[in-house]
Length: 234
Image (cartoon, rainbow, N blue to C red):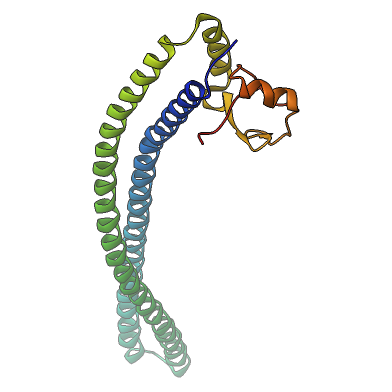
């Protein structure tokens, strides 16, 4: 059957346009989802930092309570030392005071270290808060851009699909059957332009008889890949 290169070329161009627009339309929600995921990750990082600060503060409070209790204990030992009945008892109390004082010194160092960690975490927290604001603003920007782009793409898709439907109505019945069968299986990949003397889809060299048939504007498929062939626009 005969069909002009112009007809097949126009059909293919419309199919390619439609496929590209559908790809862009499908990409939009993924872009929004990725932006939302970044916000969620930033929120999780901030939450973990806040939780770490909370735990460190609880640790500091617990150790400070222990320190106060031990300091009070040392004070009690000092009172008992003055009431010691003999030198042996005095020396034992003195050693206990020394041990508790040393333990209190270690505990004070631990508290100071925790407070320094809290300061570092609070600095990090402010960084996470600023990062979250930026990512949230970017999410809003992305959603707005995608919404606007999708609106334009959907209108354009409807227009191109309408044009394609108009072209399909003009096809001869016998060619329409072949065309529909190819497109239903491979969509925009169902056709290919000639690349010199090769199929532009699979790049297989074509025999002279096929090239001659194409010059006579006959509907020919590539014997290698099955794509409907057409000559490119001169």
